[in-house]
Amino acid sequence: MAHQVPKYDQLWKEVITELFEDFLLFFAPDLYEEIDFSNPPEFLEQELKTIFPEADSNDRVADKLVRVQLNGGEKQLVYIHIEIQGGYKKIFPKRMFQSFYRILDYYDQKVYALALQTGERAKYNQDRFHYEFFGTELTYRYNSYEIAIQDESTLLQSDNPFALAILAGLYMIKSKKDVHLKSQYKRRLMRLLLQDKMINKEYIRNLLIFIDHILRLPEEEEIKVIDEIEPILEKEDRLMGLSLEDTSFAKFFRKEGFEEGLEKGREKEKVEIAVKLLIKGDSIEEVVTITGLPEQKVEELKEKI
Image (tube, rainbow, N blue to C red; front, side):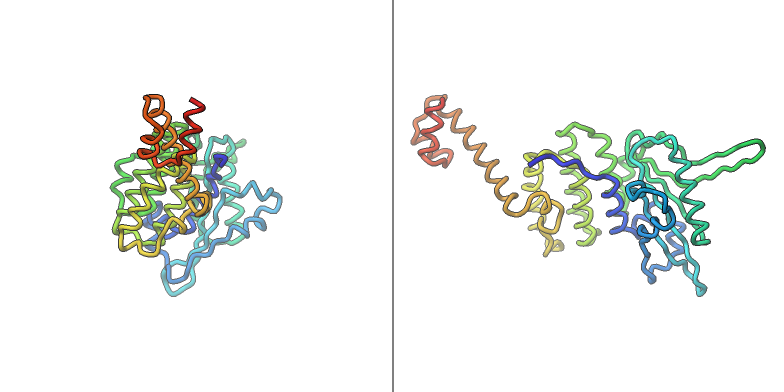
């Protein structure tokens, strides 16, 4: 199976949607307290095509627009604009400003803006747009959060489930192309998630999907991780009904493929042991007994040796 490159911006959009209340509590606790969540948030990405008719659809793939209602008898709306930025872009502050004035002009309501900087180089993006020309001057400041500079211990101590998503983003940056380190991080996150008694099953499912995708490993390493977490899923009573079929593992390792992959891994390990035993001088019968491989297979290996 080819090692697929995750679409990180889309992953962030999906996990923000699924855990939106905790996302907002994590980044804007004061605003969170003012929102009436009895009126479900409305996700308006499709309206970005109307607000930005000249933009290619791919240009807005990292944008999110959410409409929420504030507490109080009178209907008060707030539009939450979230921009997910994975790398450094000189024009990024201008883009944030353009999004702000388009949204403000189109809806004529309050706007909360957040730039979520998810990549290592994204930390160099500014948190404001400044314009000055012969006495005409404007500064637009927006909320900016840089994952690359966050403190791991602080995130680990957070009670907010969304902190695990941020931690996964931080681990992705830290591990880069180091497969061994990335594998360690992935195991750590999944154990934390599955053993946290405060996180409900639906959140666990969504975070498992996110963590699995954002910390993608080569197939052999993925199989090892799956093999480790499956007993935890089976052991935890509160996870009853949740299985690997409910996670993104199922998307990349269909049940048949998953079982086939595990079997191939075990078969390969048996063959390696058999070769070592044959080189050492053990008989075919002894190798068959130790490894469980068919006699014909062991004979073929011996001929090759």
